[in-house]
Image (cartoon, rainbow, N blue to C red):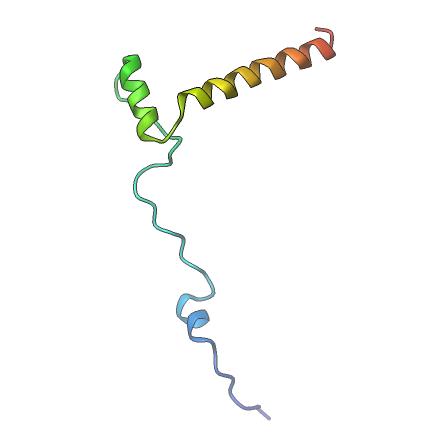
Length: 78
């Protein structure tokens, strides 16, 4: 016959086993939207600063990427 009823964990049944994601305010930090076709450099730098981007670090990443592409090109003898 039927066994004793099992007590379900209150958190598992209340949320159906799915944890709610943390609430984020605003867009993703890497997302920059501009309705203008042209934006001044100062405005772009301000938007990057507001998103938490460090220009020196971004320049370093860009230079590392250029160096990587150059190294791959040399190794492939292109």
